[in-house]
Image (cartoon, rainbow, N blue to C red; front, side, top):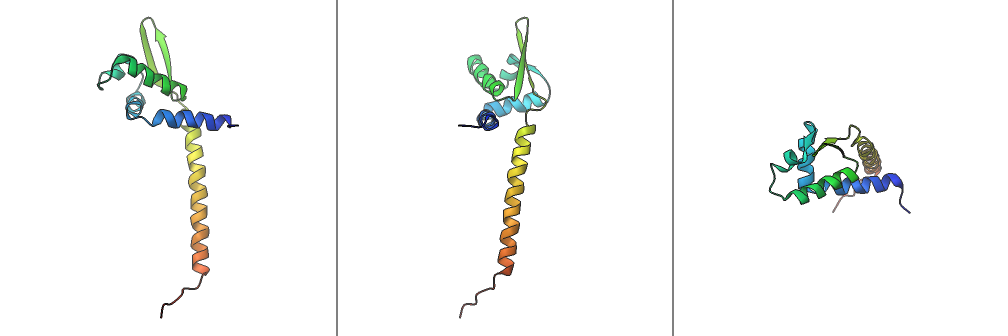
Length: 114
């Protein structure tokens, strides 16, 4: 059984795996944008853009709001906080493992080839 936070990470990593979605994130990092604004710089049909945005929303990275006929997307303020913490923990664990390896190597006598 999957942990809920791992399921959220799976969705988030999936959302980040596509270059179009990453481009949308870059745009949205500058501020909210309507669907047409997000679609303008890329050569993709509007239904495909909407699918990509839905994946970003399901991944917890963006939120949308519809006012009249215009749907606007914006970054979730805390979108990457949990992922950043998870990555930092993995990095810390790897650094600890490398530190232990360095200590072990320093304690191991060198073999000399004859």
